[in-house]
Each structure stands twice: as C-alpha cells, then as structure tokens.
Length: 440
Image (cartoon, rainbow, N blue to C red; front, side, top):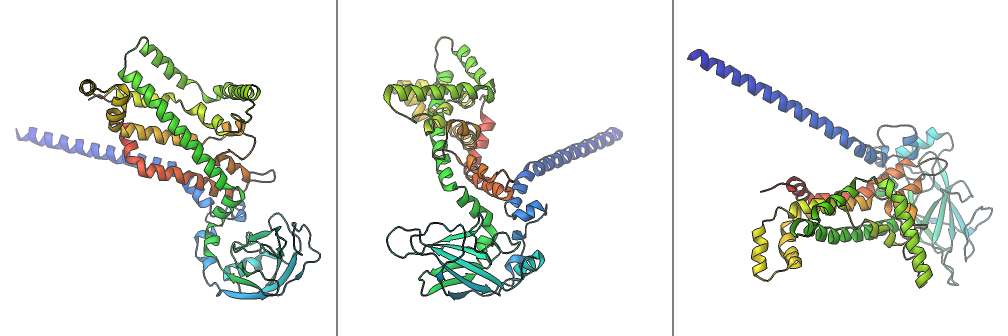
C-alpha cells in the first residue's frame, strides 16, 4: 500500500513537472511571437524620429531620442536685423512689395550642432544666416508675411526653409538636417525699419520634426478629413445593411433562406483583386449615366460615393452578427410579440442592446478596412479632393528616393486613430470574437 502511494505521488510530481514545462514553453513561444509581431511597429516608430542621413547610414538609434541635441543649448535672444532691398537672389517667389533681405551671424550654437558643423567640412562657425522677406498679400499695403532662411546662399531651393507669420524654422545648416537641430528663428516684428528675430531652440521641432514635416508637406489635414468622412460613412452603411441582413437570416423564416445565406457567404470567398475591375466599370457606367441623363458630373467618380457605397455591404459582418443574433432565445421575441413589437422594434430595442460586443467588432473591422484603403481610392479619384490619408503617404516616395523617415512618421499618424479606437473598444471587441457562434 505504501509503495502504491509513493508511486502515485511520483507520477503526480512528474505530471506537474511536465505540465509546468509545457506551460512555460507555451508562454515562451507566445512571448517570442509577441516580440516578432511588435518589431515592425517598433521599427516604424524608431525610424520616424531619424533624419534622412541617419536612415541612409543605417544608424540603429536616432539622435532625436538621445540627450545630446538638447543639452548645452545657449539662451534665447532677440536680434535686430537691418533689412535692405533684395539683390542677386534667384527663384524669389512673387512679392507684392519689394523683397527685402538681411543677414546676421550665428555664433552661439549647441555642442551637437557645433560638432556636426565641424565634421561636415562644408562650413565653420560663425554661420552667416540670410533672411529673405516677401509680401504674399495683395492688399496694396506693405505686409511682409513669408520669410526664407538660408546659410550663405541667395538661392531659394526646394528645401529652403520657409516660415510664415509667427511660425518657427531654422535654415539648412551643414549636415544638420534642414535646421532641425537649431538654432531656430521666429520673426517677432516684420517692420522693415525694426525687423526683430527671436533666436532660440525649439525642442518640439527637434524631437517631432518628421511628424510636423509629414503633416504639412503632405497636407495630412485634408487627407485625414477625407479618411474620417469615408470611414464614418462606410461603417454606418455596414451597420445598417449588416444588422438588417443578419437579423433576417437569424430570426426570420422565408423560402430558400439557407441557400441564399450560403450564396451570400460565397461572395466573401472571392478575392478582392478579382472584383476591382468589375466594380470600377460599374462606377464608370454610373458616372456616364448620371452625366448624360441628368447632367450631374462627378457624382460617382472622384467623389465620396465611389469610395463608400461599394463597401457598405460586407458578407463577413453579416455572418458575424447573424451568428450572435441566432443565440438570442426565442422566448424574448415571443414575449415582445405579445407586447406589440414587430421585427424592427425587436431588433432596435432588444437585439442590438444585447449585441454590443459583436457590433463593436464589426465597427473595428470595417474601420480598419475603410481606413487602410489605397488601391481603390487611387482608381476612382483623380484629385486630392477625396483621397484618403493612405494616399498621402505616397507623397514622400519620389523618383529620386523615398524619404523613409517621413513615410514612417506619416504611418504612425495614420495608425494613431486605429489604436485609440481599439483602446476604448478592446473589451467589447474581445467579447464579440469570443462569444460569436457559441450556443447557450
């Protein structure tokens, strides 16, 4: 008897050891999978802080995420710049008043800028900063509101720093990434007789320069607005069509219901690439029809209708909601029927309040799909008027080279709304995926 007890104890100990090892191995594999899954996002985030030169040199860690550029910065100061009519400048933008120029020396720089300037072999301290003031307002008055900053050059180039009004910017210091590391300048008083410039170090620009550049150069405010409208309209359409179709397949009886539902799901198995050309031809046909019959141009092509209506019916969303609606007890409908409820009222007052989790899952899935569209918007639009934010990312892919750091900064911007949405709906999303299709 004692031997049997000892044997059972040993077997139980071996079982616990094997179970512990198996659980530990499973956790290890999950941890490795999580690291592999999050690595692209971490690389994107890290690259978004790099300079063009740092990415080209394959530097592992960006200087913006170190303390070096931000330490030993001289104090801010105001500089009065003598302004005279501009001479020998090339590529001056149109100015309604006589363009003015001024110059001043920059001697006080941070240790980081001084080191980079010394290593560039292109210049040395002090640096001569030239400022060009122009008047872009056609109001018949002298009103200088746009300024160009260069270092020892009287040529307005593609990457010449332009500051408008009270904005902040720095010239393209030698090997210093377009003035990112400072010093930065702000025009406090544009009066030609008392032109005052503030010299200081803007830490916000030094850290988030790529995000600022991506937002302004690619006109992300327009693209973001377009994406928000397109996504909201698409998700709203999917919720309306999806809940009605799912309720019909789950709670109503009609001839051929199962066969129709099978055909409906079969459409989800068709690759999206196969349907792009037919959908495009339909959009072109609708555009021609409304133009010829009603004289209404751009009603479909290059408008929100082509970007949203084709995606307002989603077979996966119908399937997800139908599986959950089918779990609701019939007794609830019978009790509601006795109180005078019809199908629409039962759906609105009983089914939907009980289906928050799957509905939020549908919202998240369709938000991601609508937000990340790229190929279809490029096909059905010919201007930026209705193009989404994903198209804005292509602005930094040029023939000469791709500005990867700006693409990654723009990618982070496009990802933030999705992360915020998931953060506030993750509980409902998890419950919707975990419970859909279960009986009980």
